[in-house]
Length: 299
Image (cartoon, rainbow, N blue to C red):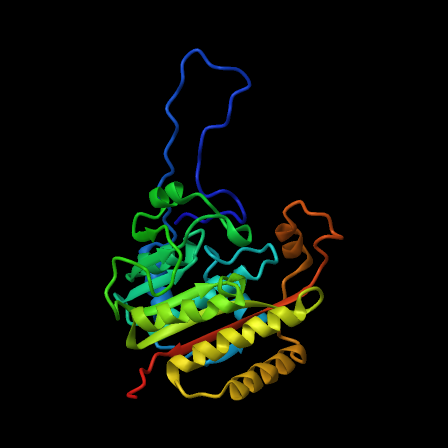
């Protein structure tokens, strides 16, 4: 089983030589990534299948340690929130969707979650424009070679996505993506989820939320916007005041919980990407996580 190193390029390419060689050698194509062997597939399926996930929760140190013990392929030790978000998403999918189900990932970037779910037996489509938004990756062609079992679609996700009929997917999920969508665009994303998700299917998302530091109010506002539209998949006539109250209560709970998992200083440094500290100071960031079944309104 191939274990991937944290924050290394998942593709190989030729470096530019100091001088033009007399004879050019062909560039080595990226090789397919294999994350699981048969034993690990069986172990993960047995451990996490049919495990219930609450409608709204947050990442914890306990869950991170469980993932570090059992999903090191997608749980690196570099302090980033994705180290708890990626495995949590896989666990949530295993608990909500039978093996063989059709999944769609929104804005997946590096297809680690999609790749592992495909190896576990799911039919996975990943939709991402690969334009580098939010420090995301752009290496679409390399990922096509590395993850041949994932259907990579180079596009934004909304109700205008072409090539798929309505109610195509058993689950639509995202990992640290929706908070990067402008607040006015969240409804468009959920219009797409409502269109392409099967009745009874699951909408599963991890959301980065700043709870202290620069951008706190904006992050809390977009988190509430996301959860309002998420909850409307289950209850179309839900009140925004009710979902806002749920979000506020969850924020109070996690701030008082010793087990809450935070973005570390090391993780913050990775996301600075060379910016000065004054331009990108430390912020206290958590992961809010939601899993909701789609129940279409009969109205």
